[in-house]
Length: 316
Length: 316
Image (cartoon, rainbow over all chains, first blue to last red; front, top):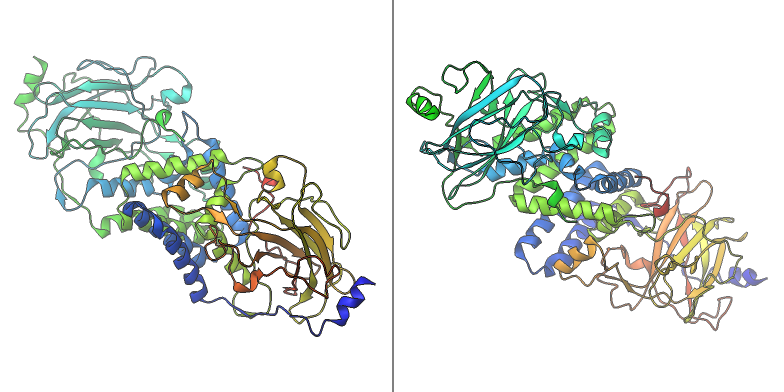
């Protein structure tokens, strides 16, 4: 028989016995090999970012002693997030938001040092280019009902000088906590206003409402596995731009909302972004609950500040 | 005019001036907030893994001072990876491989301490369940031509005892560096063998060839941006299992391949996995170039060792 021949040679044949010592050196050698192979990257910035990414990725796996099953769960989770994304849904932005990464990038974008500017908040996945333009004082709630809300105030430089002709984009949920996009209907509760010669903006709308993140994707499955409620407090988004100023992306959060101290996406980055609607004798309509809020933009070269984009414009 | 009324009140109105100090405290407060919100996670293991993931994700963004544009590039890249994945393509496994993460998980899976077992290598995205079974000595290259190669040796315990009836799954490219799946054809150059009563396996096949990773997805775009060649050295995959032994996923790399010291997916985790085909008077067919290799399995409870899976079976 064939293998009798082989068996006779056992004693002579090389036995691939070996010793594996899994120590830090073996693992760090691998990390260094990866970084070494990526060192050909022509862009110094890409090289820096990827080296840092690899170091943290490897350290994460080593510190958690990540198992093959967990690794595969992660692969499947990330794949599902990509496949859930479409022209009106961005699951990776949602993931970034719910892990606090978006707010970190916002804080970094706000810059270091002492700056007398309004804090950023999240752009979020519901921003859309080409929202309708409205005149000063017009209502942007065209197709929905709900308690009225008045928004007004000024767009100012950090020195307190009014900025005329600033563009103020506003978007929010309706009073049931639903964005227009989620209803599949035409645009509503979103609009673009322009400040007057004294830097004032003025909009009518409805009261926004707190709302749960989408219930049908991998991010929701993660939130459920973490026993997180998955809600955002009621808020109103602002994207404000003016020539020779840094774009400001922020939001105002409605005081008293039950989720305001526990926002699922960590958008309430400052108590100064919390506003209390109240009757305001100085407002254009003193009979309507009102938020009066001045926003301060950093002067300088016009610069984007959006941690995000109109999801419909993203290319993969 | 409406806003004259408002202007008169300027001096009385609240000016939302504020000071932002972006210091480590602000950023670490956010990291702690995220971890605190996730502390409700019932599974202690999931809590540990996600806390570690969030710490590294935040640290990565802070250390690189990640910009909004870079963040969005990352979002789009990950989304594209998800959308590129299908029942016969797994772009996130490819990404994990090319960043060295898969090999890290393999090394962790090999365990710590001194173990006299064969090292793991990558399962990779081309493994398939239900490959055809062949008899001892049969050829698994059924539909392709190329220089013949003979594989034989024993499956042994770490103490050197032969393991009869072990299952030896083998798969590889053809001699043009292409996997059957990539041709869309029926299964080829893959097969399942069983060791004989003395622990021997014996297979005929063709010489594998080095090959480039897929050229049409986001991972290839990353490799190109990094000026990496994107090739794998020629190799033969083995997945070996036996009752009461830990499953072994490994590969043998063909000595002399130009990419053997620079594998794009860092699969050549040990020089002991490099084999030189040569004529072997002890082989069943001494006239065919041969790799004789003994594999050593860790005894104990039967345990999976696959860093990966048949991609077609993954659910998202």
